[in-house]
Image 1 (cartoon, rainbow, N blue to C red):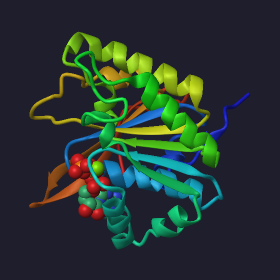
Image 2 (cartoon, helix red, strand yellow):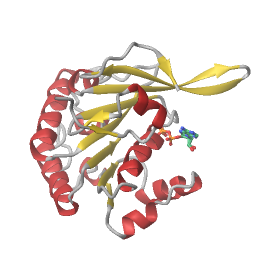
Image 3 (cartoon, rainbow, N blue to C red):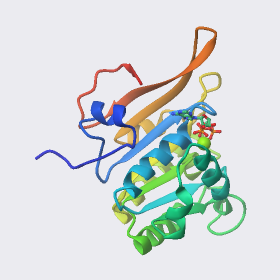
Image 4 (cartoon, rainbow, N blue to C red):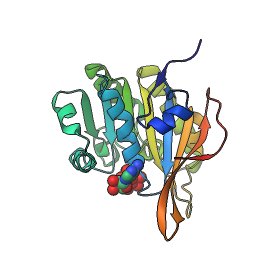
Length: 222
Ligand SMILES: Nc1ncnc2c1ncn2[C@@H]1O[C@H](COP(=O)(O)OP(=O)(O)OP(=O)(O)O)[C@@H](O)[C@H]1O
Ligand SMILES: [Mg+2]
């Protein structure tokens, strides 16, 4: 039986993915600073919200109000979705700054973070989850522990939430993050956003690096 698909919110991408992401799985959108990761996460949530689905957006670097404001400048009204509680936007920076379930020398308290997330998701019956960026969740002082953290994180999310998940992660071609590659092994699919020089200006490019359960030729799209 073919798996149920969930629109990515980008029609050109959906057509390459036989309709979209596989329902209930986790995906990563990777990219350098300013390549459009947050925008892609918002498009994913918006496509669900427009169909009456509920969404949970976890932000770490930007305040929810700023994200709502930036989205409004692209013509997307997230405020009304937060007002009617179809969308919950949470600032998770407290988890990484010495408060609630905060980071220890062993890394962050993943059990606490994921059980809190699951509580929020259940309350609104969320079917889509975005964590933008996911990198602080799997951070550890010891690079060798990052992969264990990532594995535990994905396992906890899948055992406690029934959502389809999109995580963002920063990747710099100039200085690869030591955790780069980790998310890629543990999620069902990886999208890579880039800006490339074209005719004296820049153009956005999206590459599908991996997509389990979906036949894809490695190529640059969109
Ligand atoms: N598909 C797109 N079409 C038009 N503009 C876009 C698109 N994606 C991103 N942008 C614009 O590019 C800028 C950066 O986008 P965004 O904030 O999504 O990037 P980011 O990768 O999340 O950045 P950061 O690394 O700072 O978190 C924004 O001003 C946004 O309006
Ligand atoms: Mg961003």
